[in-house]
Amino acid sequence: MTTSDNATTLLGLHTAPELLTVVNVWDAITAKVATDVEGTRALATASHSIAASYGYEDGENIPADLMIEAAGRIVAATHLPVSADLEAGYGDPGETTRKAIGVGVVGANLEDQMKPLAEAVAAVEAVLAAARAEGVPDFVLNARTDAFVLGGDRDPADVLADAVERGKAYLDAGAPVVFVPGALDEDQIRTLVDAFGPQRLTTIGVPGSVPLVRQGELGVARVSYGPWSQRVALTAYEDLVIDVNRGGGLPEGTRPLN
Image (cartoon, one colour):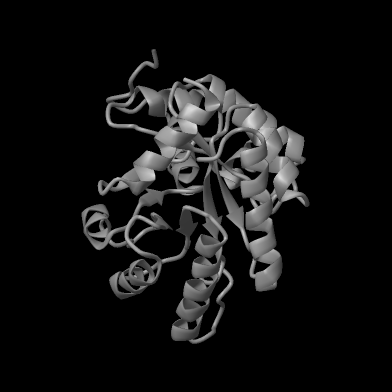
């Protein structure tokens, strides 16, 4: 399939009534493992996890070209469509998107970091314009608002109102879906879906999240797991180190990789 075809496939997975789930990957081997698990329909990178694997702190500290190279290795390890976490665009959202498409990426997260709304909308427009120029009109921009992530001690009702306002602005600018990370409750999810429409909201799975089945019933398009998948893997690794240091060994049920 061409890059454009893969983008169309990914877009269809978001607009379909069935909830799309993606357990985020950060390198070629996690991409291969996820791809080989029955039921996996798309992959998404986690910028935090990729940066950590190279020894960088999250927050656009990793060089953009290194992040893009990592995304390209993930694309090469799977036949499934791949969406990349491009943080806030590394200073040039349009050019970063062009480079990501160049390695086969067909969707992206883009953080607004609660910048002035006009500036954030302009970044969304730049990404979509770059995708069209590269011949990928169905590029799945998952426009992220950090209203909850950066909400601090503000009134939750005000934070939710900000998320609604910003999400609607990104949809009006052409983004197909809006990502609202945070520990959202059912009422907040319902409000966001009512504001954006069904299959336009994406969320993150965190401890205590609304169950996947219920999110699907509420009209959420996609649930991803950000850095949590790497945390799960590293927890298992740390537990192995602890057990070995205490005289133990490999846990029962450890499976070989193909």
